[in-house]
Length: 92
Image 1 (cartoon, one colour):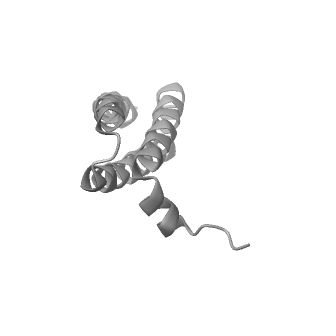
Image 2 (tube, one colour):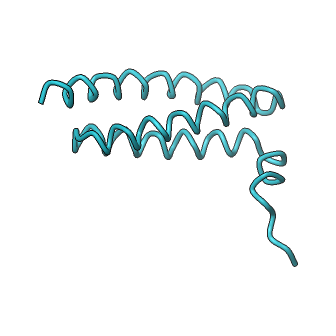
Image 3 (cartoon, one colour):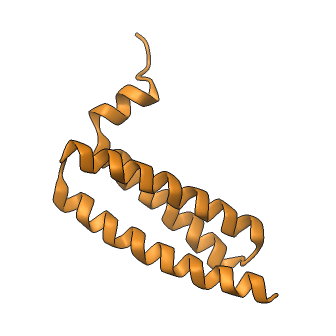
């Protein structure tokens, strides 16, 4: 039996994909906060960007909007945290 491709999986579960990508962004931001280095910040920015794309996908599908809303709020918190880390890295 063939595996689900990423694309069909996204179409099947956009809110799950968004939740997972927010969790990955959370880990990346925490890593950047613990180790404020340029590469960690870049990694976290990429994770947040990925989560933003997943957010748009989830919103387009109007799926589990309460969960999506919670993740949107959390993503905004992560962005603010990452901005703080970026300031630290730039000052070094």
